[in-house]
Length: 410
Ligand code: AMP
Ligand code: MG
Image (cartoon, rainbow, N blue to C red; front, top):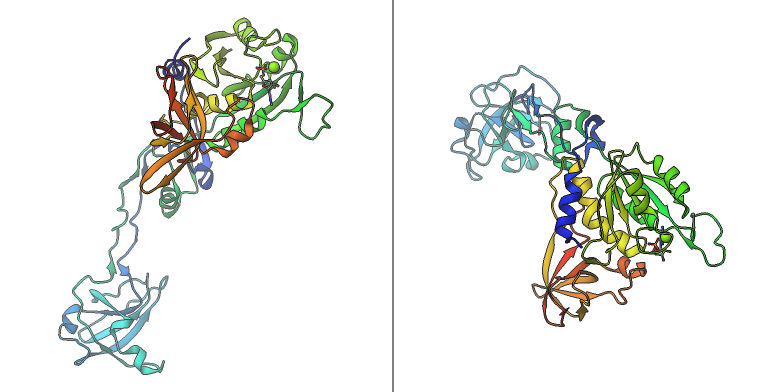
C-alpha cells in the first residue's frame, strides 16, 4: 500500500493546469491571473488634495500658530471632479476638498482643523486664518504615486484577492483573463442510495456524498457537476461515467472496497488506466485513482467521512494545481492532545478533532466516535489530528499535528 505522499504525487503527476478564460472582474476572485497587467495611465491622474482644507504655498504660512494666525485671501474653491485654472499666488488660498486637483501655485494643504474656519459660524469667508505651518507637499497626493503609467501592476499567476480586484478596477478593467475553474463531475454509486427530494424507502439512505463533495468543490473554487447516482451494475456505471468525460476531473464515491458490488475500480481498469488503489491511511484506505479517456478519476470511498477526508487530501490539491494555484497543504498546528487516538494497523490516522487555542497553546480533542460512517463527527470537527504510521497511539498530553480544516479557504 502506498503512502499518502506517494499517492498525492501520483495524482498530481496526471493533473495539468487548465486553459484561461476572460472573466467578469468579480468572478476572478480567487483565480490566477493569466497575463501581466500594465497601466496605461497614472493613478492618481494629477496632484490632488488628501484632505479637506486650504491649498496654500507653504512658504506663506511658515510663521502660523494659534496665537499668531497667518491670514490668506480665499480666491476660489476646488472640489473633487472639478477643474479650475485659479492660481494660488502669494498670500492667497483655495478652499479645497479631498480628491480635488491642486491649484497651480499651491504646494501644500492645511486641513480645516488647523484653520480658524470653525470659529466663523459658517459665514462665507473672504479670508482664512491659518493656525499651523505646513511643510511643502503636506496633504498632497502626487500624480502616479499609486500606479505610474506603463508600470507592471500585477504579475501573471497572481491569485486575485479583494485588493487586487480593486487595483484592476482602478485601471478600469472589467474583465480579466484568468485560469478557469475546473468542472468536477461527481457521481455517487450504490443501490442503497436515494436522491434528495425523493421519499426514503425502508432501508435506504440519502445520497449525502454528492453534496458534501460538491460543497468541497465549490469551497475550493471549482464548479461541481452532480451526475446523480449510478446503480451497482457495470452497465449503469459505465453509462454514467461517460457523462463525466467532458469534465476536468471525475469524483466517484463508493464502490471501491472489497465487496461484490464494488465495481468502480473494475470499470476504471477496463475503461481507463488505474494508477493506484489503496492508500496507507485511515479512514480512506480504498481510495482509487486513474484516468478515463484522459480525465483524472478519483474513486473516493463510499463512507461519508472517508469521502470527505480523501477529498481534502487529494482532490483539493488536484484542483489547486488545475487552477494554477500553489499546491499547498492546509495549514497545520502542533497541539496538545486531550484524547487517546489509537493506530491499530500502521496506517496514518486522520482523527476528526476540535482544536482550540488557550493560553497561547493549541489543544486537540476528538469529536467522539470515529467510525467512517459517522458524518456528524466530521461536521463538528475543525481539524484532523494525525497519528503517524509508525506510532501506536497518541496519548493524552502528547503533541499531535492537526490539519486545520477551517483555516485558509484557498
Ligand atoms: P461502498 O464503498 O460503496 O460499499 O460504501 C461504503 C459505505 O458508504 C456504505 O455503507 C454506503 O452505504 C455508504 N455510502 C456510499 N455512497 C454513499 C453516498 N453517496 N451517500 C451516503 N453514504 C454512502
Ligand atoms: Mg456501494
